[in-house]
Amino acid sequence: MVPVSTHDRRGVGELTRFASQVLDVVDRIPSGRVLTYGDVAEYLGEGRARGVGTVMARYGGAVAWWRVLRADGSVAPGLQERAFARYAAEGTPLRRGGSRVDLSRARWDGR
DNA sequence: GTGCTGACACAGG
DNA sequence: ACCTGTGCCAGCA
Image (cartoon, rainbow, N blue to C red):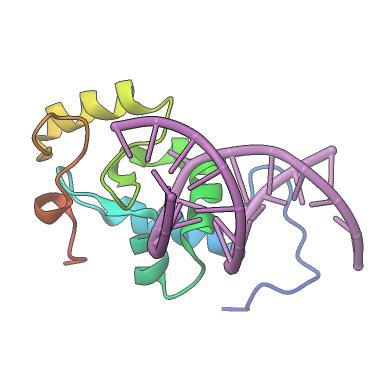
C-alpha cells in the first residue's frame, strides 16, 4: 500500500485520507449508539472535533450521520428532525425532555 | 500560498 | 437555557 503522495490528485468523488477514515469510523457505530465529533477524532488518533465536523458536513450523507453529535448530546441545527426520527427507530436513549441523547447510556465504547 | 467558512469544544457570564 | 469569546482545523475558492 502506497501512502498518499502530494502527486495524488483528488478528483470529484475522491476523499482525502482523513475524510475517508472519519467515514469508516462512523460506519462502525452500532445502531442505537452514538459518538461525539471529538470521540471520532480520538478513536481515529488523528484530527480534532472541528475537523470531523467539517468532513461530516461535506460527506456525512454517505453514512449514519445521526450517530455523530455534539459533546453535550445535542444535534446541530437543521438536523434535529431527521436525527430524532432515527433515534426513535433505533431506540437510542434520550435524556429527560427528549431534546438530547443520553450520552452516558448511548455513547459507543468502540467495541 | 492565502483567506474565509462552519454539522466543534470549552470556559465564562 | 442562551449568548460571547477563544482555540481549533479540514475543505474549498
